[in-house]
Image (cartoon, rainbow, N blue to C red; front, side, top):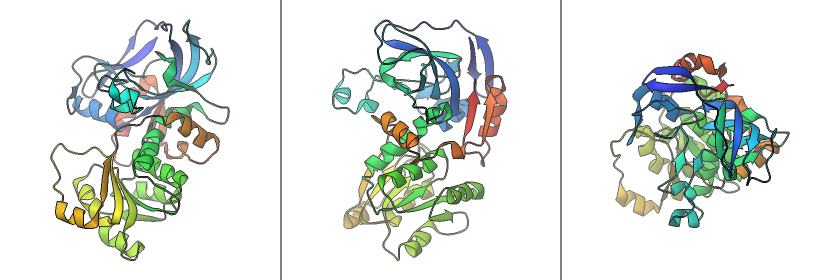
Length: 341
């Protein structure tokens, strides 16, 4: 089978590898579509994300879906020919986090395309059946692949306890910010303000239903929020850009007694916060890391047409065009690219 391997920063190679055989509890998936994530781009450009360093050739890609080609001896509920989405993180299932249901915090999780674990830029992937989900007829394999970033948005909405009638500010109109917008709408938010520095991304957000967009290269985010909320602030602020100014603005844009959720990954440098002011405002600050128990919800939302993920895909390319695809993915105007196999 063909795989696209990151051999060093900025360089892919197409290799032939043996097709994997599924273990007793696994299914073999013929990959059809794989989204290009910001983490993939970061590994491509820098060869590392924090403590995760690409020391050996690595197969990237963790937003994937396809068709079941074979099932292991102990697998039930899935069969060859089923169209499926793959949840890319497999926990140990034994630690305290796993037993509490927060398996995304498992210290021994195997996560696709995180060194040293290969990802889904491959024609076939063998994966535990417990983390493979059948797609209904109404959901395409592209939507199935994009259940992954949508899951991030769903987990953020849960962490922010978003409910009916809430006003939510989302900083960052990339794929995660847009998925957050979809998820908080589904959770009941009636007003969504979204900010960015790229005009085309804000235009896309407006076309997808944002009630107010803010180009922070041209106007003050806090002033815009004050104006939109009559000085009240938003019920929830979701920081999805990782930009220091946006992180700093979260506590000024949220209402007293409101909630801030931090999901965007920025620089390693700490961002100082005014703790006294936070106490005075009684602001709840949460962080959001990956997701857990979200894929069934994501698939249901897609099947019911409550959310749209295909609408922010900018381009698709074949596996052999992976270099060109990543060059385009690094452009500021690009929201999401997809590799098709």
